[in-house]
Length: 103
Ligand SMILES: [Zn+2]
Image (tube, rainbow, N blue to C red; front, side):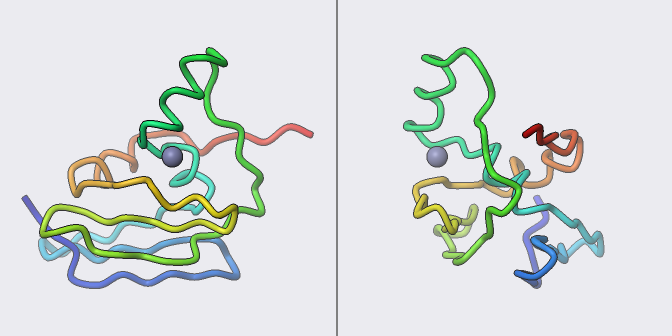
């Protein structure tokens, strides 16, 4: 399994760039990352509400903490920081469509 060799968090554009040690580069929006939080709270909310998480496009990734050798714990500007994103899950997020935002 590839692991990230470099993480670049672009607050202004709201994007996280991950350079993997197999040479691939992945760009993920902060909105997409927050929308796909897998923590127990977010899963429960989605189960109860029977819909995907509703996240403001203004959401920003404010902190990144390594979790062992298998993933990242991401902190967001809404105060949410419980989500853990294992490497295979992060890689898979490239296949997921960007969330749409309707006012
Ligand atoms: Zn969560």
